[in-house]
Image (tube, rainbow, N blue to C red; front, top):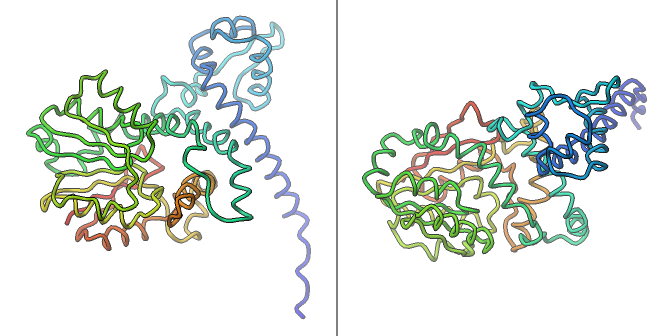
Length: 360
């Protein structure tokens, strides 16, 4: 037998410190989520140093809860505290990453994934034992959070950075083409496009009835008569698609969630006109785990994948690709679906996603 590896006490001590930090940061994510949802960060950013009573009054909240939240923020180094007069202040350097005014740099939006996923921990735990997955309906706020996420990464740069990835697309949209968004969620991107380009026709499809209803209401409020939304399971999209129906098709972080991603992609290829373009936004990662060890968001993205993306697909009897399926596999899937040209783009502001421009 080989000699036992000697126990490295310094390595053990360093790992212990790392886990203690992780416990504190996990708790900080919960408090950051509350600070975002309650508007505490927004309120504090707009007022001078103040006591808990004034902060609670400004935000219309209960003082006792605000005071305890402030304690967590002070202990985490997020909020400054002056013991001389008992006042709290949110430094502008911190507000630059925590308020709605800071969009698209508001990292508090992403903190919401931690409690959202924690709410289904028991369900996911059961899947570790029995297999299967957690139904889409169990994630009550997921579309709301994803819409906010999209509101930071996609909507502000949709016209300035994303559409220009396809040369000449802006003119075609102005002239009038047929557009499909697969896995459209609440339809925020599609409704924005429909507002900008009234001569084009837009269709959004998603599995969630709740998300589709939200999209329909927004379309009505915007007066987007050129946009329609359909609630549909796309597991057999390759059999449902009508050839050459659309000139431009998009998916925004949607393919890896599908029960049958290959069927969805084949359906997209069938639906696309011969001179059409498919634009896919999907998670920026490698298909090989060793190349994700230095990913700045690796632990978060693998966690979201395990506790949402992968499991909702498996719940439908699907492939369970997961969010970290990676660029190599994504390109392979696009090519297998029939796309002869696949270009991979990155945007400087977006550390989460690749942008694939696919042509027949």
